Length: 331
Image 1 (cartoon, rainbow, N blue to C red):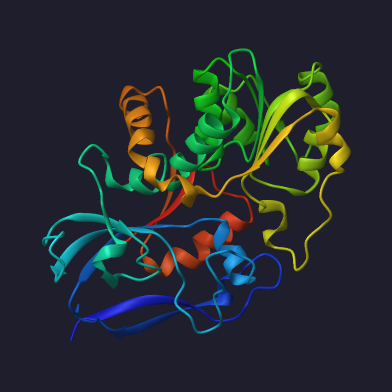
Image 2 (cartoon, rainbow, N blue to C red):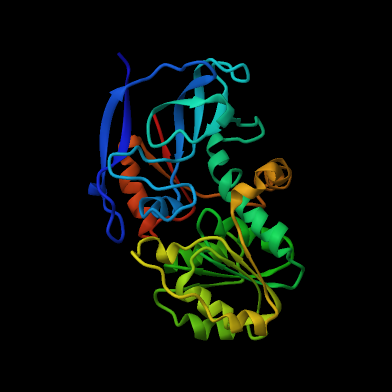
């Protein structure tokens, strides 16, 4: 009997997750029923929003102790009872934190051949890339000369936002959590400057770097950084609210920025839910694939090896220690 190794939630985290909040389990591999597909997961995406699922605050629902951890995967079809998929096909779906999965064929999407290597279907050419493209290009609509401020500047989404903004003529300022990340943002991603939120006075640095205000703030963090950016918006600014990294590990939510800051700037503030742009994924790929292939869009992936490494890699992500997209490569 073939066994399937899975990662289950052992205990709801208090604060930043630790490895003992998760446990490894082995269960018999299931067989697909009508309309279902058996897949072998090859890459697992680790994302900050998962922490919100553990706290019961995410729109996709809560994960309780004993539940399988959820997550998007790139997988290979092994056995198919769905007419759209044959054995050997590469697919993308929510296969979870496990080596094998039986999934409804209607919930799967093929991974196009133009996505190479396949891990990119979970990073710059997957949900993070679509998130960046939708928020910046569809919602904020940057113009040459705009000052674009990106929090979590070297993460899976932020790194794409910054590079897309630079390609559109923006002056891009980043905020990150270490000198290493800031150096990477400037030297490799083309940011004009990057502020270390842990060691620098962010308010003073924003005043110096953005004397005429911030035209676009792409917010992946929330918390105090949203307050500081909102107080420095230029007239006609656009704010894209996309993530709450500063609050995911907290048991309660802090008050938001004063609405007066947005009113003063006549700002347009939009919430971004990437699932709303699923029907535009191909248009996103039409723009991003050539940029990746030419090297104009640089991609960095932070890859852990094996399903047993997923808890440690996720904890590292939630401590803010990764650079680029956090992935687990499965055997």
